Length: 286
Length: 287
Image (cartoon, rainbow over all chains, first blue to last red; front, top):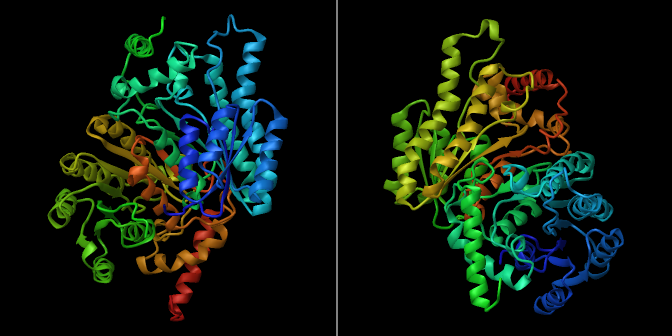
């Protein structure tokens, strides 16, 4: 432990699993106090127990502005301020193409991925001004940088807009020394990918354990990303090491923004293989 | 000391001053052993004497393939391996408008700013393969993206090439676990700015303090960037914390490329700083 976030207070949304959880663990190890905002109450309370004194959990649906206000209020109450807002929460949204997408599907996608990002900035600015500055970290996706056809178009639009939001917000709040940057994660083996192929959480989680071996050659660097790789970039952007960096998108993707090295057919075949293995492991039917 | 570069060996070109020096100091603090490759012999010898066995200086003209190859070879012969190459050295090169641009000056700018980066990468790759992977960080420039009115087309064009060769080599070298990234420094007060308006090295070095107040207003963040800020980004990209980052071109610019607030003021600001620096030298004022 080197204490690179000593004395800092952070909020991490979606901090109960995947990249968010890796962020919580690393931020705490580096000396931060963290409010974990997530809809997974059981895991959140467990995490609060495990990292007692450093973590406070609050149930937060990022689509709901009142939940954001309560989350920021908790940071101020429990830890006395706010220095870092890391908005990481997200989930798969409708795969419908624009000729068939419904109004509700579109609105749900934007509320979850884009409108929530606006709330993250909106509710972080005032307490950060009080501290004389801060760092807001948003989460975009390689999905909008290196397009593929079999993707969620609503997701692509929302994630592109997250990057645009980060740039204009960086301009608007630089005078307050609030820095705003956006991480662009590549293919990290989390359950979000498997969840598109099977709605059962247990299956999606199990599938993720096979991704490392079957997707190593998906991008220029011959390995899948780890949730800890994303967390280390979040730490860099959260810390004063990046004091002169704002308004930027930073890809953490093994080069996937530049080049995808696997056809859609091979991708789907390997996903099917992972699902097959997961079902066998769990003794479940397709 | 946290030692984020413990056990790593780096080559830094242009490490005697400016952003290279800011990075060099940080690398040494974080546990790296460093080959400093620079054309400034006196400064290089002084730094080597100051830092002892963890720093080796080699005189290197980055326009010479033999010099670049020797600098890379020194990393392996002195420290046993090469993990990180920071291709940072450059100079302003050809200035002035396109109509009067001298072809030899264009070619000289290419050799200095872009070909030098290619040479560094070319010679680092075999050594990094032997080390099982590595990280190359190239210095691009805000002028690779936007015009700022102080430099001719040559420098910015070559720097755009530096950004792009980083992306191309990221793809080529990814399977060898050699990561290639570029940084895009914003307005950092270094001697290259005086160099770009024809000031001598001595005057250019003395100009930098006179630039800071204005540079704090050039970009959205209301502070002037420092060589240390650049060094932190290079450290991050060079360290294992960034082991899944390749092919990125990362601005370290206080938001300059989000909103350029220099607003055409640069030429006057540079001239004023030059006048003040020349006056200070004439008065014999301490640096």
